[in-house]
Length: 196
Image (cartoon, rainbow, N blue to C red; front, side, top):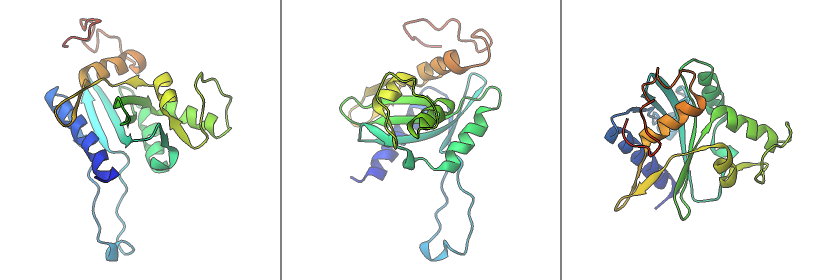
């Protein structure tokens, strides 16, 4: 199985988890242009992969999956980083990158775009290092994601995984949300992460 289809499995599993949780999730489809027409037709680039909407908050997301212990910066296009950063400036918007590390435990982390860009500056030597974990000049390592990100818990099914989408949304609202928990109607969400 090639890496593209494995990446699609992660995207499909996350999308199915959103549907199951009754959370709006919309994929931005890439437009296929036959190779012989690509130089003659200009198609706008997708700014990011997905929109998720819940608790009066928009989540522009780029989803990535890797079998390595890091995600190379080159795997995320510069126009996607710029678009996610621009989206993050709006109120009630939390934008970032969901990174699925497929090794052993299949852990998944959400990295807010501002945290990702700050780490990238440090990795490129443009800012002072304040991280506990070792940095890498060309990628974001698993341990840095664990340090700065929000883990999106998952459960193994027979073949794929299901992701704890509601818990992820609450964690994002607590860490990055601009409204109070009462305004988001999540103040009753218990520490054991029951249902909303």
